[in-house]
View (cartoon, rainbow, N blue to C red):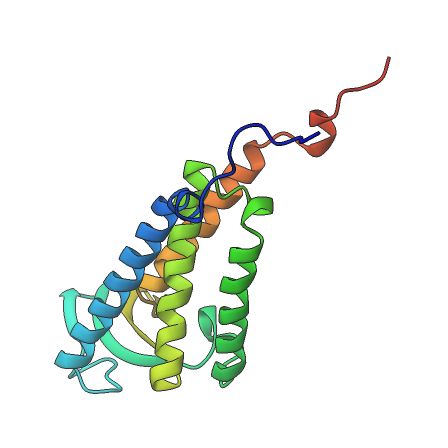
Length: 180
């Protein structure tokens, strides 16, 4: 006796179930790499501050061209190879853990599309250049926010969306019927 009702989905159907995630990941990767190529074509590496930085808003927002061998806020600086391996393993883990992560839900596909596209964008930089190209530079009075890029922004937004979604999900204990 079979517990499966109806025909099982084809590989194409299983692949298409994640089309939103894949489209956002590719779009994020493309936007990230195009923006970095634009910066690299217009500014020598490294360019930070006067005279080379492009002022967008005086004393607030600049375009620069720097490299980060670390992770967010330059944590683990000089560990670009280790971070590249970790990024690749993370993408593989997401692919294999897609059912446990709830990737069939639309908002989760949006969050992981941004997350995977951002991870792939920074991984591409690490493999090509040995560092991640950062170029968005914000100043808030005397505080200078760590310089970042499109991939970093996508990763942050993706993580926050997933955390928000996760907090709204019922706990496993709430899903199991209670005995009387």
